Amino acid sequence: MTRRYSRIVGTGSFLPPRRVTNTELAAQLAQRGIETSDEWIVERTGIHARHFAAPEVSSSDLGAEAARRALQAAGVPLQEIDLIIVATSTPDMIFPSTAAILQRKLGIAGCPAFDVQAVCCGFIHALAVADAMIQADAASKALVIGAEVFSRILDFNDRTTCVLFGDGAGAVVLTASGQPGILATDLHADGRLTDILYVPGHVAGGKALGDPFLRMEGRAVFRHAVTLLGETARAVLDKAGKTEADIDWLVPHQANIRIMLGSAKKLRLPLEKVIVTVDEHGNTSAASVPLALDCGVRAGQIRPGQLLLLEAVGGGLTWGAALLTF
Ligand code: UT7
Image (tube, rainbow, N blue to C red):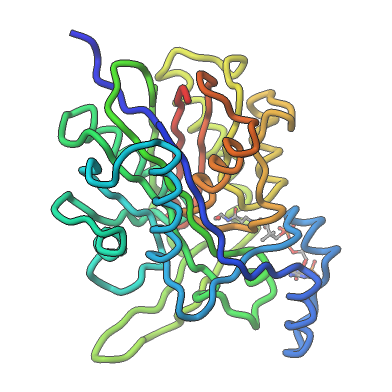
């Protein structure tokens, strides 16, 4: 019997139209007495601009548009979708899930739709779950989406975090196939590190309690990120019986160009084999990997048959990778 794989057959993404450059953001922060500069942000992160959603726009709005574009690219009719997984840390509501809201916005009903919460590594987790469900014949045509409005949880009085993140969404259509497909996935979490990257606030008794903003010990996250990404990249290659020389494209989480270059160096990959969108998107958390993937596809860089390594690290800490033939 031939093995049942899952395979990406279409990608899509969507960025809210408002593009905010470092210079514009620095001028806004200066009005609050917060000092930063285009030079600092570019040198330390590689970010030049990010997109911010309008106040009435939610993660499900961005995700639904990315999903429509992925469906169109795949040529898969919406009615054939039998699974929706949304990775987000900025859900529309506490419940129902952003996936259920997005399902309604797409205009379908009946198929399972749920969220995955693994912060910046959420899309890799969602992809691994969808892959496992397709391999187990629990689904055949899945929409896997990363969608975020991180601007809502940024403290614009904290220059160490507010310059780093942006809003956006990316999506893939994943279908059952006799041809590989996703070759291997690798997921991890270490809850001992919850307090180096978190949004500690919560809702109780009709009020938002505690601090509802993103807090990060940037240097600690940076240090862990390079090591953990190296380990998870090695793990997926080993699981699939491949080596770094086989990789056509590294599609990393877009948090900081220095982390991405460190990660590529560990894999002995030149910058020319790394999809880079952090310069224009900033860190869009769970949206960053599918956004970068779609940009690489639409720019004609990523082509059918090529071997891709997707990797991410995020709050939790969570980290993981997926190796796939596109
Ligand atoms: O997506 C989830 C994963 N997240 C990440 O991967 C983020 C990982 N961390 C990072 O990317 C980097 O640590 C940052 C970009 C957050 C910070 O870069 P860094 O090179 O680690 O800088 P630093 O935190 O060591 O700060 C250096 C200096 C400090 O001043 P002093 O103490 O040396 O006087 C900061 O106060 O830069 C200062 N600084 C700033 N200056 C201007 C921090 N933020 C800013 C700013 N503008 N926005």
